[in-house]
Image (cartoon, rainbow, N blue to C red; front, side, top):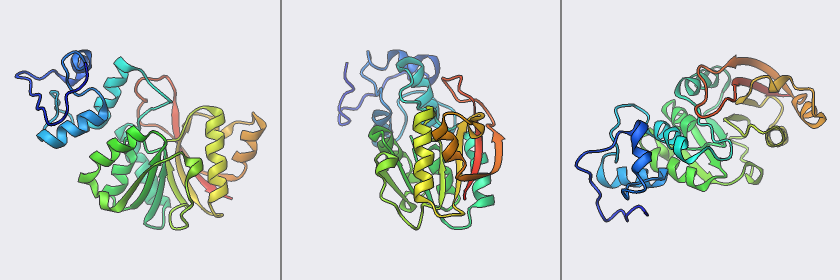
Length: 244
C-alpha cells in the first residue's frame, strides 16, 4: 500500500512505537515508510508518525528501517558520539570556517558542523538521502549549508572549502581508494581531512593503487570509533590526514 498524499492526514488513535513495531506495519497501514515521507509528515503535522522519546529521530528511524528494509550501498550512518569526536578533531585542526563534507547521507555530521558555526558544502550521490538532509537541517542553520545531490567525482572544486574535508566515505576498498585519490587531487598541500575509515585501512600496503594514494597523506591522529555502526559488523576509526 502506498503512503497517502500529505494532504490526506493520517492520524492513528494509538501510534506504533518506532522500535520493534512501526516499520513492521507502516506499509500495510498506509503510514509514512520512507525517510522522505516521514520528514514530510513531520513538517505537515508537527509531529512524528510514531511514538519516539529519543533525541535524534533521523538516525534512529533510519537504522530501525534498515532492520526491515536492508542496508544499501554501505549506508552506515555516523553514530552521535563518533560525530561528536569528529567535531573535536575539527576544532583542533580546522583553521578556517569553510568545510566540505562529501558523502553526507542524512546529515549526521552536517548538523554538528552547523551547530558549531561552520559554513558547509555537503553532498551525496543518493538524492533521497540529500532530500532528507535538506528537510531536517533547518533547525541547525541550513542557511550556512549548501546540500547537493551528486557523486564526489563530479564535484566542481571550490577553493574556499576543499582544504578542510570531513566525511564518512564509502567503505569498499576500490571506492575508498577512489575517494582518497579525489581528495589528493583537489586539496592543496597542508589540506586536512577528518575521515571515518575501516579499521586498519590507513596501514594497507595492498593493492598497490591504495598504497600509493595513502603515501600522499601524513597521518596526524587515529582514534577508534566511540561506538559501533548499526546493522553491520564493519569496524571503523577516525583518521586525521594531512595532504603532503
